[in-house]
Image (cartoon, rainbow, N blue to C red; front, side, top):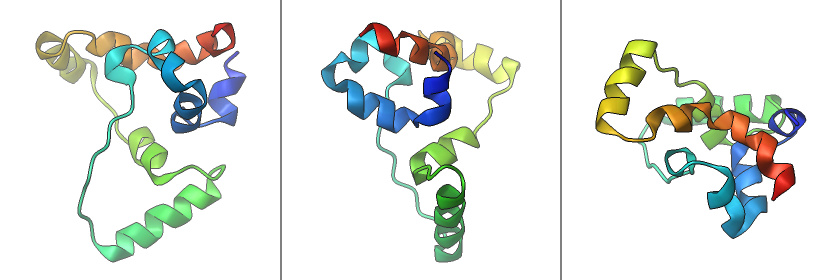
Length: 99
């Protein structure tokens, strides 16, 4: 079942699930839009990296590059209920076949 995580990005999985996505992923693991402003040369670089890595979209590439330490995660979890569950949501891809 972890094969799904290797074959498809979270964006692809969530789009394919449609409205059923809320039955598979915890609320804080759902994708949300975010606008950032970065220099054009970095836009070029990140798009090129996305194409070279199993055609990942920029959102997935950026999300994969963010890491959270255990101490940070504990602090976030105090302020945001469900934070740990969302961090473990990659395992939720295993449940995709059940939906």
